Image (cartoon, rainbow, N blue to C red; front, side, top):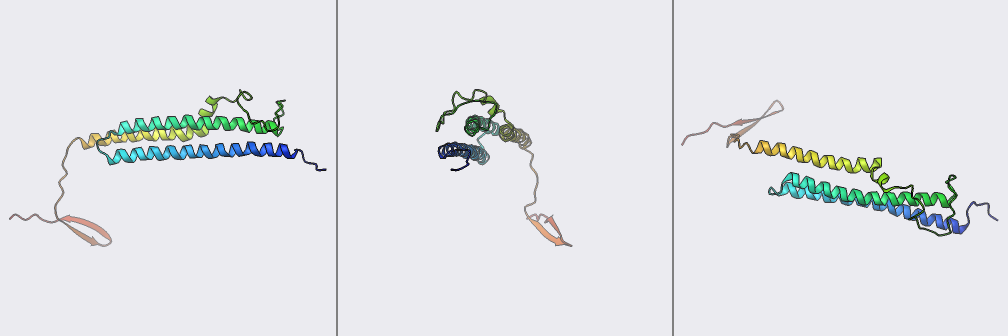
Length: 181
């Protein structure tokens, strides 16, 4: 007879729960990758199309970021519940006396202490998603500053013909004198 703490069925149950937790981690990563891809595509589209206002792109990007933040928070919230279920099945939570049936994977009413809001405002979520929101706002601000400079319509005279000289490892660009014809 084996001295194992868990029966084969209990080990299998723990393995099922661990597989769900792993899948949740993968989904969370995919949500972040998809969000970065969509936001990057929006900015590339905006920079390549002069008719698109930069601040419109920033607001659209922030809306996309918030939607993905909500989705990722839901995934983290669910993952935390499954981690609690794992701890209960493995009898790692000495505070609780929850009796979990073999192969029971339901988490809906078992863990009311796990709040969605706590997942939404967790440190990793705030660092990830707020940094992108701030980056979008910085882009919007900088684009506004650049548009102000561009709208002044100052022409910078530049000679049509230049002479390039390399002397003592220094590059010099000199204008050629203009010839009157």
